[in-house]
Amino acid sequence: MLPVVIDAALCKKDELCVHECPLSVLTVEEKGTVPTVHPKKAGYCINCGHCMAICPTGAITLSAFDGRQATPFAKENLPEPDAVEGLIKSRRSIRKFKKKPITATEIGELIHISAYAPSGHNAQPVSWTVLDTPKKVHELGEVVVEWMQEMVRQKNPLAEKLFLAGLVNAWKKGNDVICRNAPAIAVAWAPKLGITPQADTVIATNTLELAAHARGYGTCWAGYVVLAAAYSPKVLDFLGIPEGHMAHGALFLGHPAVKYRAIPPRHEAVAEEIDGKYIFKAKPNTH
Ligand SMILES: Cc1cc2nc3c(=O)[nH]c(=O)nc-3n(C[C@H](O)[C@H](O)[C@H](O)COP(=O)(O)O)c2cc1C
Image (tube, rainbow, N blue to C red; front, top):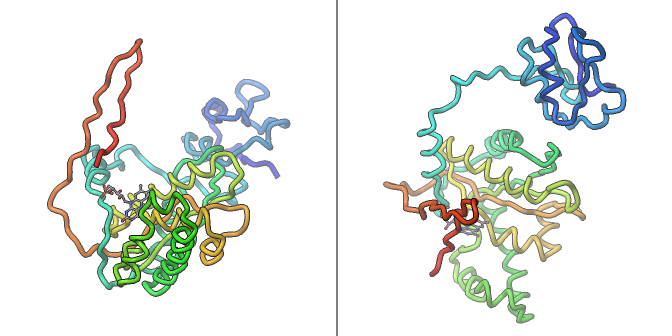
């Protein structure tokens, strides 16, 4: 089956799709005819849908999406730049959640939105594991703490660097500094091998985070969970992450129990011109 299907009756023969395709999958054999899939390039199609997004008459569908139409979208539907900036700047890491649950269905909707994030070669390699109760999240915390304890016992340099002994002690005293008593977690994982799986997973996680904030949910990156998953097969197993895969992003999710009055400052982006290049240098936090 060919990856791209063009309805000849709707096609205006404007060749917009031919010029848009990033992999030159489409071609016109003769000027003024309906584009076709290049016989040697059908396998190059990455299902990005740029051909159907640019087609003014909706003449194009992708076989991979069972002939589903592209969703119409006009520039006027975009939020104002100030609104987007407000969304980005007002997102905070939420570490206190209301008892009110967030359901796997609600998280599933956010996961679907995150599928619109860019990925290398449009590979979309990201899978998610969702735990949707505080009990399940706490059980995950226990497996993470078990790994931390082992790192401390082994005197692994990472244990000292990341103050793991302190975290374990706090956990034992009932202070959940690892999972923040969160009502849910979504862990993003992908195959170890691929085009750009790590970047894809981080971008998908960040996209989900912003979509969650826009809907009024609170999120916080679960850094210790991702770290433990990188070392502990037991954590991977708990999360149902198969062999050959790696977690690169994880978010605690719920309804925020805190309200912020203002947006804290961040360093200005200041450029230094060096040999015709503009260097916007990071100003790493010094504690
Ligand atoms: C990769 C990553 C891992 C993080 N891990 C944790 C974590 O395990 N626990 C936590 O409370 N915050 C975690 N954070 C949140 C950061 O501390 C937070 O983003 C930072 O202090 C800035 O605050 P803001 O997100 O409210 O702007 C993590 C953030 C990132 C990007």
